[in-house]
Amino acid sequence: GKGKSCYYRFLSKGQQWIWLQTHYYITYHQWNSKPEFIVCTHTVVSYAEVR
Image 1: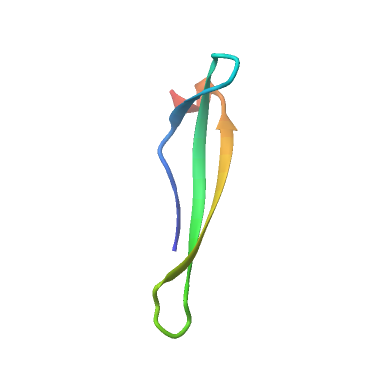
Image 2: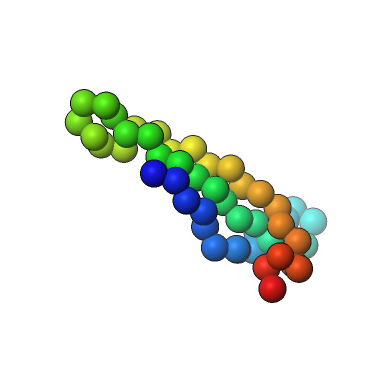
């Protein structure tokens, strides 16, 4: 399956808040149908997109 997270904030090393959203997908084992891998991509989004 695949999906995306809600928007969330991350405090950077420079003490600034960055807005992020994560897209993910899960691959399942072909024989036992258990989750095998979760792949995530974190994307920086502007505050205008969050509002």
